[in-house]
Image (cartoon, rainbow, N blue to C red; front, top):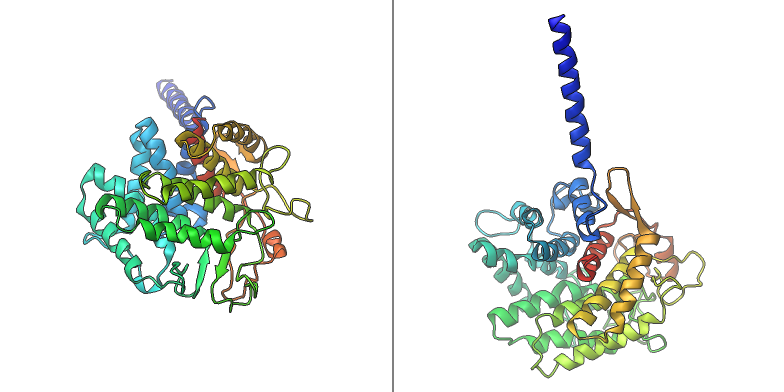
Length: 395
């Protein structure tokens, strides 16, 4: 009898433990969306390098994008788990001597600058000298980074004479923060020059929207022979351009002559892209052709534009009316793209695949290419865009 009682007690104890574990695993719907998505990401990807299904650690712009949202969430909540998640990624990617694992300068990959942004705050908090060393080494990449004839950074060594729109986001917020913090702003004209080249060569005169890429030599097969631009106005490309502007302006001094120029660019693209949103306030994969067969409202572009609208209005770069637009579009984003499972984890639908130009097999950049690339669930860029927009809107 005594033995039987012990078994009953043991099984009851196990059941209680199991229930408790299940209860702890459920993300409360009382949390703000910003924390619900952050906890969902940490649950699905205990290590940040696993985002997008990566099987090996890599120094990657996607992780940098998502973790920039974690950095902002930590600054708003002071919850150390968000800081630790970011720090764990960086610490796994660097060695004891202050080198990024598998970083090869000769690749001249502009994407490498983006995750390096995370090290400014990490160094300020921890004073770990490795972080400071890496910030300097990656800044030095720009000293020899190949440029187009008019001075624009190539996207990568393997893409000669080409500026891609996401390259502005990868490089300029980092470049601006570094030059203001450590160089007394000596490179601000060069930062502004990158935006000027994009504005002068990659804006479509008909719609006022921005193409994904520009080949100054006009030699690559996807380039228009008159303008050098790629064929498609990609929703996410517009998002990259807008967040590049709002995050560069975070550090760009108001006293500098080019400050008003950059604010002007932001107002221009904001006005134009606002005319291409869906009835519910979201944006399309091929941004300028909502009626095209197979086109769809896309989550990463929508989240990025919402974030840029909200941040631009909060910072005074854009009229306050854009904050109202951002709030309405955010609510539509939740209805259209957010799916919460039984564990309370947030899943985001309809995120564009990682598309590009050139390479092997050759990517021609046509509208059809962007529309036949199957959208996916829980893409890293959609995660990051939703997190950033939720933090900015205090949702």
